[in-house]
Image 1 (cartoon, rainbow, N blue to C red):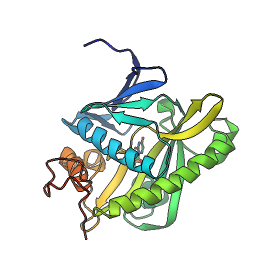
Image 2 (cartoon, rainbow, N blue to C red):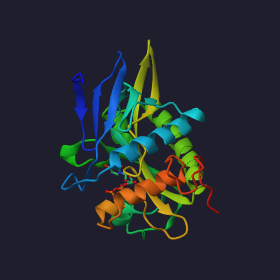
Image 3 (spheres, helix red, strand yellow):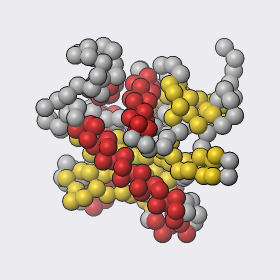
Length: 253
Ligand code: UDP
């Protein structure tokens, strides 16, 4: 196979030069890291599952009019995406207390929040992705007030939509992380959803048992990481070997 130029290699994905200008190929690795990459593992099949889950969620979001970088899935591990200028923020939306919010503010994990909360982290490995406010973001020019306005509105829509989508398959969307990019079309710029949405970037709990179906299984050494990711895929109806064999989402009452 022809060697492709690597544009960027991250912890869980690689971006290659795309087939035409303005496109990239996003490759999902099996590598998993946590705690500033101090904890590492290779989880066989994880990249394949995240590629499928992220494809599905991005397409559902596009169907309700959320602009994304996603074009189409190319194969088991790769998807074609539009090249965007990544905004250096991790945008976290939370519905239930967990993770760093519980640790920082002493709110018990699992407690529903009085309302959904959006937080921002500055994407910078050397600084360990510090928590920042809108003031920092606009003062340092990481995003303009207009960009932030778009980011907040999109994040609220995405949270509402995905909360309902997951609820329908018996999963509580506890929190998740999004990344956005600037997409230039002639002289016009649009903020679009980028990166991925998968159990690597979401907390997903079974609605009945609160069993974790996400990367916390890896962070907390709970085992069964890829099994949990494939359970998410099965419930979303995107694994052909779904127990129900229906091919559609599995409604859980
Ligand atoms: N998250 C992520 N990448 C990061 C940090 C967080 O995808 O670099 C996700 C994480 O999986 C969770 C949400 O963002 O769904 C909130 O994470 P939190 O701030 O609680 O941090 P953590 O406990 O993961 O360190």
